[in-house]
Image 1 (spheres, protein in one colour):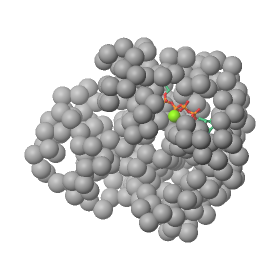
Image 2: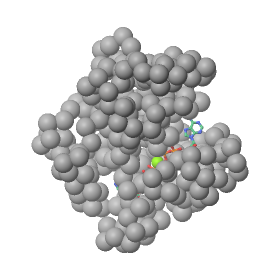
Image 3: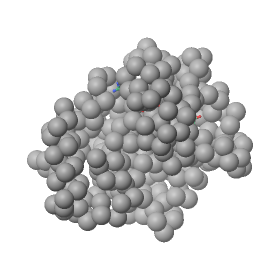
Length: 270
Ligand code: AP5
Ligand code: MG
């Protein structure tokens, strides 16, 4: 349906056959307008978009980041995914993070800040990206400001997905994820089931449940989130970047609201 993010043709977006076919597909979807707006944004070559998604665990940061990545060609940067991979690979950061993550606490700022700063120092640093799960403390936000400043990169918007705790618990209790590092697709047994039970639609890998999706750990993660979120939100509100949107409702409706935010921040009629 949509071209893969690694497809080089995505960088020179034009009215090719694949674009036309994808556009036709877009109009057969329920949320054709939001999808068309994605095409409209993406079609403008040299277009720069740099987003941060904030929100409690289970608010849909990963789900929305993957859609933004597929449809707008943004680089999806998830510190949770990077840390889980580090745990699987037994790296020194992974060893330090493992028990902290399993308990639903935050990995120390210096470890995650260095992971992020290291990626941005690379010659192939992300130019157009969506940050998912970083920053999540004020100290991380300040460190990320420095990284962006040193690389002369500006943020487009910071979107905070608002969701109540009861819905978070319901969502995470039903989440299944693909463990394959190059895929990481996310499903929900009620709201977004895979076509074949227990198997990833994208790569056919058996799905797993995350260790930190047990109810007691979810409660810890929520407490950590509530302890940090005001400081973080105020920081970006002060920079005029924060937009809060409801994380409730259909996945495509939430996506459409994010697209609205991007359009309004960019002052364009898309
Ligand atoms: P991380 O992996 O970032 O987890 P999180 O923030 O707790 O968020 P989740 O991934 O659980 O939820 P999500 O918002 O991505 O929701 P999703 O789209 O999957 O971090 C894990 C751990 O790593 C942390 O606890 C910490 O220890 C450590 N860590 C990571 N970053 C760190 C940092 N910067 N500093 C320190 N430590 C860090 O959706 C959830 C479910 O809901 C899915 O099943 C999905 O299908 C479903 N769903 C999504 N949207 C909808 C919708 N609109 N309607 C119905 N269902 C929906
Ligand atoms: Mg996530």
